[in-house]
Amino acid sequence: KAGVTQTPRYLIKTRGQQVTLSCSPISGHRSVSWYQQTPGQGLQFLFEYFSETQRNKGNFPGRFSGRQFSNSRSEMNVSTLELGDSALYLCASSPGGQIGGNEQFFGPGTRLTVL
Amino acid sequence: GEDVEQSLFLSVREGDSSVINCTYTDSSSTYLYWYKQEPGAGLQLLTYIFSNMDMKQDQRLTVLLNKKDKHLSLRIADTQTGDSAIYFCAVTGRDDKIIFGKGTRLHILP
Image (tube, rainbow over all chains, first blue to last red; front, side, top):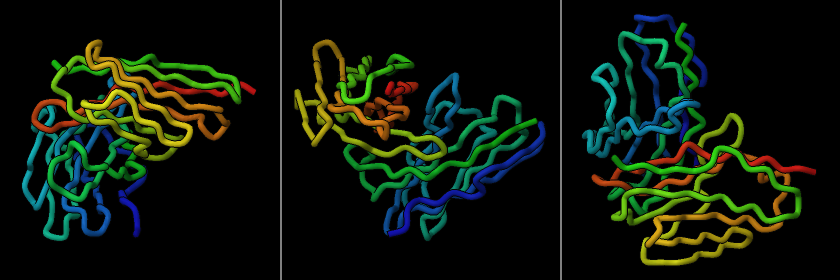
């Protein structure tokens, strides 16, 4: 089975721009979660989608949004980029059901740099 | 709020045992995880333990859970150079979210 893929792997943007990141989960997985990883804050949960619905959400401003398509692929969007949004954005997929107890499979991440 | 704490760095000689420690605040956490992240890669689940277990062993890995003290540890026996990575402790929090620690960077000394 192919693993979780994320595109693009690297991205450079300037402040004020917006960005869309893409995640393709493992075939058959219906849950996709997004995380932001920074050296200072560690790994922080952004949101989780299951069957095209946002099932859970972290404490991020409304500039961060996401969606999931019928094929379980997910996108996240960040509008009005700020310098502090520079981070590694990780996507994780799992079969479904509850997050707890289900192994999450992580993609390699998208490294976003905001100048 | 819910929090997971772990030390940032650990240096261990090759062949010795590594012990990575973690404390958490949410006593209702049901699942507790250890993930490994190698440079340039995403996180890989190493093992997880249910909150009703005290110990879990899987080859070179041993997880110990002290639920009273809310303390979780990961022991890697016979540490190898390939074990060099960042290790994340994570627990399920309220609303079925997973809360991660900031990671412990394991450095292997020759």
